[in-house]
Image (cartoon, rainbow, N blue to C red; front, side, top):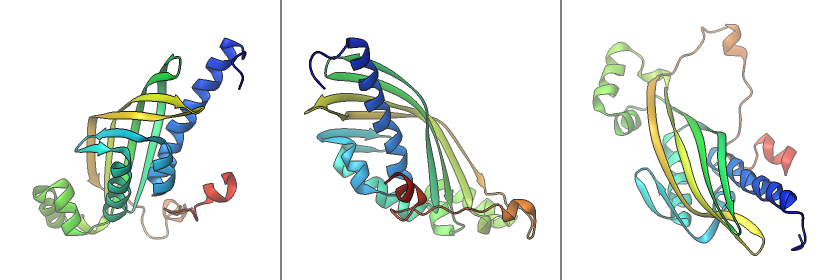
Length: 196
């Protein structure tokens, strides 16, 4: 876009480009798409993601590997964002909640949730049901526009609430059990067929 673009239009376009990166992050994480995830960050970007601190490229490898190993599925939601623009730089604070489903593997459950929880699930017969983990917080990002593209230059997250429990299921043959439209955790997912 030329330097003569109306300032109000330029602001709308910049906000839309930043919002696109924020929502593409959720797809990348949930579909375990490392290439997409890495493409949302500048090559020299950093990510401080709870227990992980390092380059964004290292984070992508770590996150995709860990989520693929530990969870059957995840669903990340960016609920709303506050974006402040300053020329070719921007700051964004985005609220999120993320839902994770883990199968009933004792080693995984005790590793992630702790042995006390795992032993309690064994004792009450809920170990094999699977386990839900929900967390909420904020992505706090510094964006930069380089060569016309808005990408994340630095991300830091907060984790402000955590909740977990054995997964709940309907009775065999119930209507809730019949509601099924599974996703794929790779590029075979419907989103790639529809959106490209």
